[in-house]
Image (tube, protein in one colour):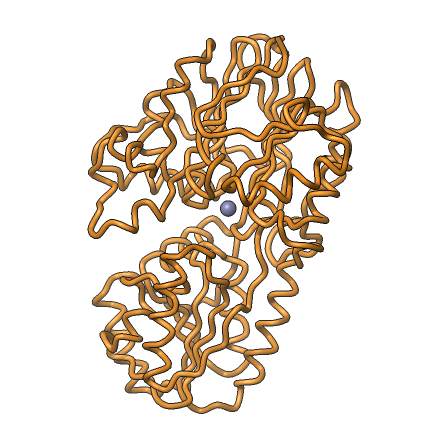
Length: 450
Ligand SMILES: [Zn+2]
C-alpha cells in the first residue's frame, strides 16, 4: 500500500500544526492549529471574521493547498488535544473536507466551541467522540485503522493517534509528557506504545514533538508541580493580605490543585477571566473534575468587577482569585490588575503566584516582563515558574524511540534550531539524515512506501 506524509504546518515553528497521512486511497489529517503569535502581533485582529487565505498569508494557519497533491479521500480530521495550536484552524479549514472530526470528549467539546465562534465559514463536519484506547476503521479497505493511545499533557484528555496500515503503524507523537502520576487522568500508556513497536510490521514512521528536545533529563510529573505549588501556598498561609494566582486556563489539573490548596489555607478560590470560565466550566460539565459546589467562575467584565468589589469589601485575606494573564497578555485579568484597571487593589507585600513558565518567545517575554513590573510597582511579591512542561525532554525522547523502534522518524513542533537536538539524538541511535530521519519544512509531501 502506498504511504505518503504531507507535513503541512508546524514543521518550522511551534504553532499551526497540521499533518496528513495517506494510506492507499484513504487520508487522515492530524491537527489543524493556529500560530497565535502571528495573530497577537497585530492589534485588533479578529480571526473569527477573517478569510482562510488571509490567515494563511499571515502564517497564522496551515497552508493546506498542498493537500491537492495527495490522491485520496480525507476520511477523518483528528485533533490530538485541545490546545489552540492544534485545534484553532478547524473553523477556517475543516469545511473544505467531507470528513468527520474525531477526537476525545474534552477535545471535541472545545472544537465545538471554536466552531460556534466562527463568523465567516459554516463548518458542519460531524463531531465524533472516541476515547483513549478506542479504535476506528478508516475507509472501506478494511486494512487501515485509527487508534488513540492515552498520553499525559498539560491539558486533559490528550492522546497520540496511531494509523495502522499494512505497511506498519504511523504514530503521530505530538504533545506529551511521560507522566506516570498525573493529577487528573490516566498515566501515559507506555505498555501500548511498546506493543505497537513490536506487533505486525512495527512502526513505519514516528512524528515527534521536539518542543523540549534540547533539555536534558526527563520532564517531571504534574504531581511534582502540584507539590511545588503546595509548598508555596503553605508558605504564605499566615499572610493576611491579598494572594492572587494565575496559570494556563486550559490546564485543568493545575487549576484544580490551586482550588484545593486555596481552601486548605482558608481562602475561598474564585476563577476570573473569560478563558478560565470557559475551560473549567467545560471540564466540570463533562465530569473531568469535581470542583466545590460554591466555586465561583466569572468571565464577563461586569461579573468579574462585581466579584472584585465583593472581595475588597469582605477582605482580600478571605479569597484566592485565580485569574488569566500568566504570559502578561495585555487584555488578561492579571495585566489589568497590574495596571490598576480593576477594583482589586494590590498592597505592599501582596503575593502573586505564576503557576506557569514564560513561553520563550520575544512577544511573550516582553509582555510578561511588563506585567510583572506593573505588579511589582504596586508592591506585589512574585512567585514564578511553579510549573512543569507538557513536553518530553531528551530522556523521554530516547525512551519513545526505544519503545517504538520506528523505521522512519520525522521531527516536528519546532523551528530548525529547535529540531537540531532531536536530530542529534536520532543520529546517536543509528538514524541517518535523508535515509530514515527526515528533517522537513511546511508544505512538503514525501512518499515512505511506493
Ligand atoms: Zn499542546
